[in-house]
Length: 104
Image (cartoon, rainbow, N blue to C red):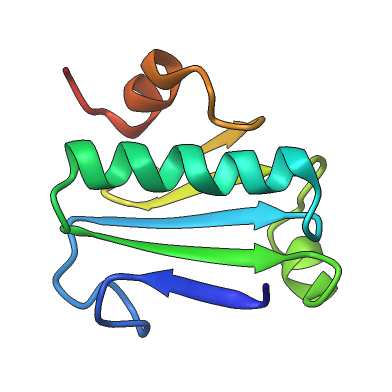
């Protein structure tokens, strides 16, 4: 899974309120769980106004270096500001929503 995007546009924010980048390590169970969890949360709470890039550090290690990645899966919230970083499989939905600045 190289860089997949959820939503129509894959360059820049493209009018999306949230721009997220999820770094994973191949097709491990933890990585796939993180993809499922964050996709589900975004679809439920952001109603299509998001862009999610999934980046496999095995296929694009230069991006891991560029973002100073220390663990995976790691979710970067690029927009809206301020940027945030969350590590784990995104299963603690309350914590992830708080990190994204989303109130239930």
